[in-house]
Image 1: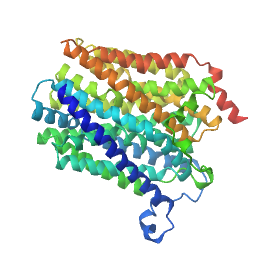
Image 2: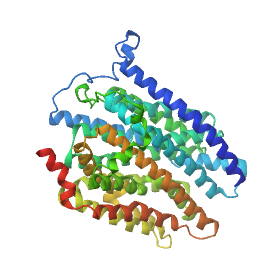
Image 3: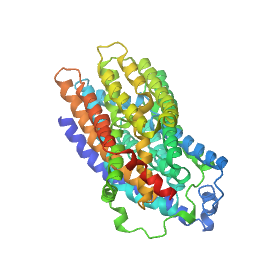
Length: 486
């Protein structure tokens, strides 16, 4: 614990420096974006700002084109996110073994990764609200470039300095903070909501998770293979750097602005808009919106982002998967995410948003219970397969579309709403990851199978969200859609 105490001081200092650097970079992008008339940056910004002053007719063909470009962006985004593969934990493993030996290896690696995720959640909490307001006022596209730029720098930096804890920890921090704020599910969801609504938006949200799976499959495979072939985790960081660069290039050449000038926020951005507690407004407008909004971040407690630290150590230290099998397992996990997203959109169309939420939540609870039963052969494989329709928090997609309908009907900007949901999701990371880490370490240090961590996932990510869902009537959930028609 003395070692972790020393690292805590490093994290505190690093957090302040990194937060400042990230904001300088993001607002530099915004400055360039809004000053495009200056000759000196006309060429550099031409691709970043295409179509933002025009409002082309939204034909089905154009809607499909815009949607597909956003979905591809998500795939690249997640490929960068997971591009270290098994080498992500491998970097921390190598650091711990090099400095402290094998004593407390599993618990130490979980603590290091969880601390980065917790600090990432704090950054997400503090900065997401103002980012949502900025995208409502200045458009969505500029924000898609912040994350891949930072990840390119820190991934190549980790490759060059693989024993530097600050560098690898900062890279992990960016994954779980900047990656969530700029270009992640919330930001991409806001861009989606510019061009879709209602059941169509619910299906689009479900497809996001399919493309998340594509990204996870590609990123995990490439990063894990680089680690497996070379035996050095730093090469997985090199792969991650090239994936981040590929994401930047895709966004530069293929993404279009989805939020035209005519629909942007006209009021100036004030200090009140920067208040991270502004999300509380979502919980005070009407009870239905409050319950829908609370459902989403709680359901995300079952997401791969929240459970990645315990999942990685579960397959490595409890199930004793060798490195090649770990890579195979993550490929399987990715295939589940792809299939789940595609299956979910079909199920929603057949049984409706309400029934889909209940079914997928139940399957999530049953699946995580099976994952925790390491005494049952192949339980971890069967458990994740069982979660398919609601895989990786996809059981929240229908309720998120309801929440979007009610928020827009109540006067929220779509970027503002997406930011508020992202803040609550960030808070769920701050809440959930320490609980999971604590539960895992508690039983691990006692020589017990750490099933309590998985039971915590079931409670936070399935049981409580379903209670909130059941507290809403059909009439309440559909009321926003009826108001729009009127």
